[in-house]
Image (cartoon, rainbow, N blue to C red; front, side):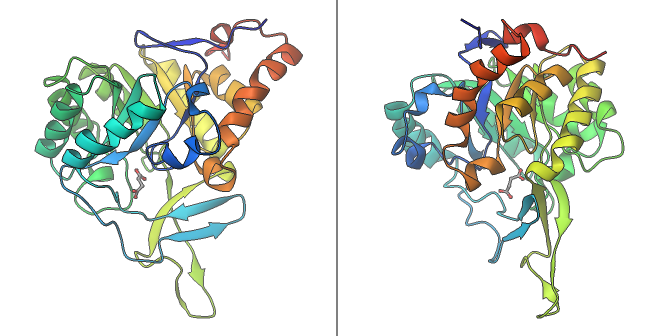
Amino acid sequence: MVDTKVMLSGLTLDNPVIPASGTFGYGKEFAEIYDINILGSISFKGTTAEPRLGNPLPRIAECPNGMINSVGLQNPGLKAVCEKELADMAEIYNKPVIANISGFSVEEYVECAKAMDKQPQVGIIEVNVSCPNVHNGGMAYGVLPESAAEVTRAVKAVTSKPVYIKLSPNVTDIVAIAKACEEAGADGLSLINTLLGMRIDINRRKPVIANKMGGFSGPAIFPVAVRMVYQVAKAVNIPVIGMGGVSSARDVIEMMMAGATAVQVGAANLVNPYACKEIIEDLPKVMEELGIERLEDIIGIIE
Ligand code: SIN
């Protein structure tokens, strides 16, 4: 019997597989087709202080081996998430969840973190400083070490839950930003968010996406994600949740060998709603094939 358990900031996950924020909602639709309690955890859709309708349509562009989204942080807002969505989620999922929060000011991140701190199901607060789809917020806080550290410090000051900062790949030096977050007190890091991309409809001579650009995700970005997870994990002493194009059990193992303690699955959920279930079922078989007894033993084994 292989051991798929991993420890993440004091939480024991049955396996490292976590649906990524924005690709799994609050789990409701997926719970109708399989028992989502098999998941290691769930990072639910990013919460902002106020409800948001998101960006104008169209906001999805298909690409070879991936997709571009420009959702724009659509969500029902902090009050509805805490009072309704989390209560509903507790009915269908009985493990600690990851609360992804976003903001347009440091004060907004703080407001969201304070509210999530009070939610018993929230095991980790994941602070999104890397959304490429909004102006004056999101990624604006994640592209410089100073502003990423400022948000980290402010959030850490109002919660006793582990704080993970979700980093952007759209930077020249992700390691410098990761280290700044660690120094500011982050308990862990999540990476990578999407790569800024664009498609043009050459018949209409217009960008496919109403907002022109959006975040590129899917299998095409997997090698970039592995590289960044490897670089960051080597440079910091806090856990890394790896993500970016993960779509198979073998990808999970590769991410963990690069240095990830747990792994989020994003775009794959949109292509195949059973993606996380299939990965979790395949994981023990692939571990046996590769002679891995304990998944934790392979974390960061690449020199
Ligand atoms: C979005 O809602 O625009 C996606 C979130 C993100 O990329 O961080």
